[in-house]
Each structure stands twice: as C-alpha cells, then as structure tokens.
Image (cartoon, rainbow, N blue to C red):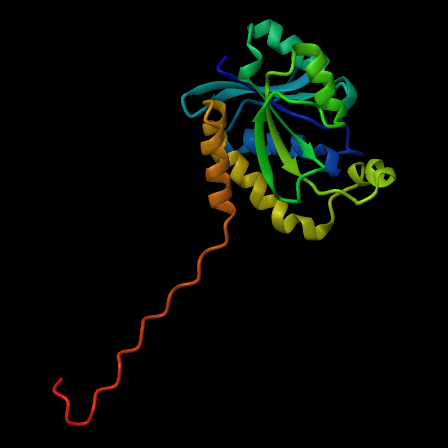
Length: 209
C-alpha cells in the first residue's frame, strides 16, 4: 500500500452535509473521480481500495465518530505496516478562510478532536490536508457552526475545491505536498481577462503607410 487517505467526519445521514464532514466529502470525491473500489466495512471504517495513477491507495472513512477517528486509522496502519508519513488526513479547518487549503506534516491538533485522536493513536508525523471552512467569530458558536450544513452559497467555492483536490491527489499521495498545493491553487484561480489588442496610432494625412 503506497498511501492511506483518510477523510474525517461523523457517520450517518444526519451529519452528511455538515461542515465538520468536509473530509468525508473530499474522500468521496476522490473515490468517485478515480474509480476506487466499492467501500467495504474494514478497520471500523468504510474502506475503498484501488489505484490513483501508479499508486496503490486505501481511502478510509472512520465510522467511529470524530472523537475516536484514531482507532480506525491505527488499525489500518498496523495492518499495512505503514509509517505515519504515508498517511494523509483530509479535514475541516476553522482557522482557514472558506475555500483555502493548506498542507503540513506533523504539528498540533489545534482543537480538532479527530486530529487529536489520530495523534494519540499513531503519533503526529502524518500529513494533514486542512480544508478551510472559516470561523463563526465566537468560541461559543464553534460547535453549532461545524455541526451545521454548508449554506447553499458555499457550494460556489466548495465544489470547485473538492474537484481540485480529487484531480491532484495523486501528487499529494506521491509526497509532493508543495506541488499539490500549487496545482490546487492554479485550478481555483480565476481566469485572467484577455488583454485587448493595442490600437494602432492614427497616421497623419500625408504620412506614408
């Protein structure tokens, strides 16, 4: 197994469209884009196996609820004897503006219970693909914000971002994190307006053509 792709979220239809489930959404988009196998119940998760480009990957959605995500991830890591740096976790990030994406290896959990659980289970040295959902502005409003569905207007940035992640995830799975971020940003950049041709200066009446 070349890479373990993990999307974080809470299982069940009641949570499916919540901001906290954007990791599940990203993983679903990846699995559909690359025709990964039908998900099966494994490792206390839904797991889809297949190839993305020349890489063999397992796409994992823990079914343990967010706070125990590490239990499922640890089972898959032990089974495949994977080092943490071949684990890529996609999840929601309050401290990034909506539609922004950042990648890093290691670091703290920044209050994210799913990341905290994985840290405790396999150590901190896995890759984190942080998908910005924005912050409600007040600490006491955070829980209601993340456990609430995206607004209809959010689809304007969410769908293009999920498509870009799915299109370029092979680069991330190959360990090229900077190139992955660059490619995603390029896909999301608005097209530059065409430059109109410069007008030719008017000729004087007796000037030769």
